[in-house]
Image (tube, rainbow, N blue to C red; front, side, top):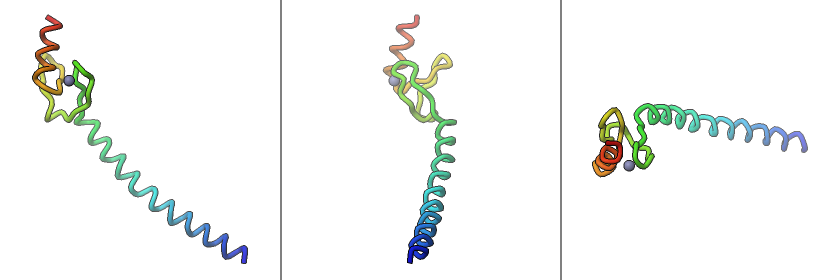
Length: 75
Ligand SMILES: [Zn+2]
């Protein structure tokens, strides 16, 4: 009887291990894709997609307001 419980536990562990690993690997792939296209606002430090960021003086900004604030403060 004890052996049957042991085998069920092993089967559950393998089942859990397979289900646990698959989504995690997908998550890591999407994270690296996200990291490559993500920039930091030079004014407030918020992370945002590069395509949505405002590019000025080799720096990225989350909005035009922060771009203007940074340009005004640095000049
Ligand atoms: Zn900002």
